[in-house]
Structures are given as structure tokens and as C-alpha cells.
Image 1: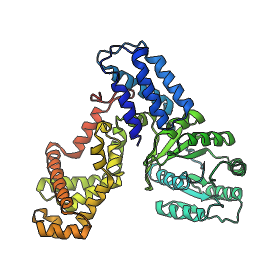
Image 2: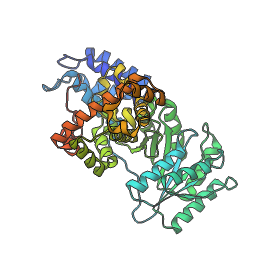
Image 3: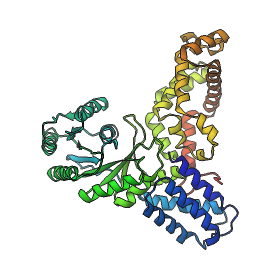
Image 4: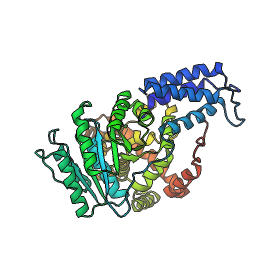
Amino acid sequence: MFERLTERLHRSFRNLIGQGSLTAENMYGMLNEVREALIEADVALPVVQEFVDAIRAEAIGMEIAKHLSSGQEVLKMVNDKLVSLLGEQVEPLRLQVNSLTVVLMSGLQGSGKTTSVSKLSKWLKERQNKKVLVASADIYRPAAIDQLKTLAAEVGVDFFPSDPAQQPVNIAKAALSEAKKAHYDVLIIDTAGRLHIDEAMMGEIKQIHAAIEPHETLFVVDGMTGQDAAKTAKAFGEAIPLTGVVVTKLDGDARGGAILSVKHITQKPIKFIGTGEKADALEPFYPDRMASRILGMGDMLSLIEELERKVDKEEADKLAKKVAKGTFDLDDFRAQLLQMQNMGGIMGLMDKLPGMSALPQEVKSKANDKSLIQMIVIINSMTKKERRRPQIINGSRKRRIAMGSGTQIQDINKVIKQFDQMLKMMEKMTKKGGMAKMMKAFQGRMPNKGDLPPGDFF
């Protein structure tokens, strides 16, 4: 996420190393780099200009604190401005207490609106313990209603049946009536999108909004559309009273423009971000954590929360005992790889670790999720005996495994080597107190809000 933007920003900060104070002269080149980095990321031009002007006004003439370098001083300043640009505070959903909460989803076709409905319903069910009903008022896109019905079944929430022959506003009214009658906690209405903004679409969503009076009206925007996303969000905001934004597809080659522009232009908070195709790839939006990711400083708080939520504590204890007894095998290694895949893969984890932006591109290109999947396929191609006792895997066995997994012998060697390395690492962790102790150590090193993360980034 935001790799190019992060790299460009860090290059601009490095130009200030060794400067005793920030002057118009030494800031000129750095601010130009920042401006170009934001424009390349497809941030809306008014946002770019205001952002750069704010840094210039605060920075010039500032003395550098003794414990910081000039690059670190500017990094902290840019971090603060990014947090301000992204929204300052976390803005949670306005869930009603002891009564129905109605959520209306809006956006263009292809923005990920329907999948966001299912992801949000899963999040509400599992993380907020809510009884959720979803309904589709999209009578135009072929199979849109069936798509939401299928997704609702996959995440285990109830679906209100509708038909393309019905009027969208009538579907919304009927769903609202059912949600009240059956005592649901949350009703989410999916609306029709179009390939572009038109009067008919805006008129229809105005009607639905007036009929159901939602507590939350969320605009779903594709994070890869840059400045166009901000323009579209503004048009929707002028048509209906938006209460928040969901930015999707931030796991792709997102340049970052949408997420840096949409809050400023709509003056509405970003409430969620979509970070993948899986049903649980929806995260509440934290402005300070996102600023930290953009600046390459990682997001350890989110990583710790994800580990606590997704790592099975009993399984982790069993694993520690197996390591201590010397019975940790390739089946256990595969289980760990699958766990990593479930948490967003290698890149998803690296994105949250501090200092990853400083890694050479060659290293980053090798640490990809294709290699993770390949390792799982290779282990699956082994016999039970080979997985239990990797030391018996000789040359002829490697040739058979390579043929069965569609890989090369050197790939088999890499898996065995990485298994050995992981085993040694886990043995050290077990001796020092295990995963729980390591997580406490991480939390002890977390900075207070607004502080720089530990370590020297320049």
C-alpha cells in the first residue's frame, strides 16, 4: 500500500540530513519532492497545495530539537499534517442503543459497494455482536440481488428477498418494515450504482434516503481511482447527506490519491477501508495509523490487534509445546503459513511493520504472496512421513515432490531451509517465554499518539 508515495516522501526527507534549521532555501527542494509525490499519487490538486503550504508555513525558521535530525523533525511535522488531512479522530459507526440502526450504501458501479455490504455485515456480527439484515435495492445490474444473497449466506447474516420487478424505494421500505418487526439491530441497504453520475441515479437514491431516513449514509469509493474518486464523492455529498466514506481496494496498486483527497473534499470522515477480497478484509479507519503506514513507519497497533483476534491461543500453546519437545514438523509449518495467509499474506503483514519502506526493492519483490502459496503447495505434495520427518527428504524424493507441485528442486530446498530457520527462531522464542512475552515486548515499545516510532529512520 502506497509504496511509491512512501519512497518519494522518504527521499525528500533525506535531503535535509545535517541541516541545523529549516529555511526557505533548504525546504524548497524537499517541498517540491513532496508536491510531486502527492501529484504522482493522484491526490487532488487543491489538497496538494493546501498540504504543502501548511508544512511550509510551520517549518521555515523552526529550530531543530537536539534529540532529532532535520529529517525526523520534518517527518513528525508531515505525520501530524497527514493525520489532520485524514481526519484527526476515529469516527465509528453511529450505532443506535436498543433500537434499529439503518445504513444506506451509495457509490458508483464497480466501487466494491456490494462486497462492502457483506464485509460490513460480517464485521458488525462478529465484532459488535449485532443481528444484521441486508437488502439489495439494485434492480438494474444483472444478478446484483443474487450476488448479495450469496455473500450474505457466506458471512452468516440474513438476507431480505427482493425482485428486479419491484421499485427500489419500495424494496427499501419493505426491508425497513421487516427489520423493525423482527427486531434486527442493523439494516444495511445496498443501492444501484452506475458507471457514471447521472440525474436518474441521484434522484433514485434521494427517494430511498427520504423514505428510510438512515442513521448512516456511506459513500463507497474505489481507492484506485485517485482524483476522480474525490469528484464523485463531492457529487454524492451534494445530492444526499453523507455521514461517512468507505475506501475500497487499498490492497491493489493504490497510489493513495483517493484516501488523501476524499475526506478533505467531502468534509466527511473515512469510517472503513477495504484491504482485500476476503470477507474479513475490512478495517475501521484510524487516521494516525494510516499516516504512519504512508510514511513507512508501520502500524504495529493494528498488527497486534489482528494477532490477538486471529491467532488461536490454544493452538499457539500446543505449538510451543511441540517446539519444546522437538516434534514441530512440516505439517505445523504449513499451518503457520496458512495462518499468515489468513492474516493478509506476507505483504499484508509487511505493510504494518516499521521500516519496511527502507528495504531494497529486490528484497520486497521476493517477499510476495505467490511464494507463500508455492510453499503450501510444495508441502501438500509431500507424504505424511516426509512432513513428519523432513530429514528423510533426499534427492529422489525432492524430484518427486517437485514434479508433483510443478516446481523446481531448488524450490524444495528453499522450503526445507525456511522450515529449519523458523524452527530455530521458534525454539529461541520458546526459551524466552513464547509469543505472549514477545507481544508484551511489542506493546511496551509502542509510541504514544503523535510521537515518532522507535528507531532511527534516517
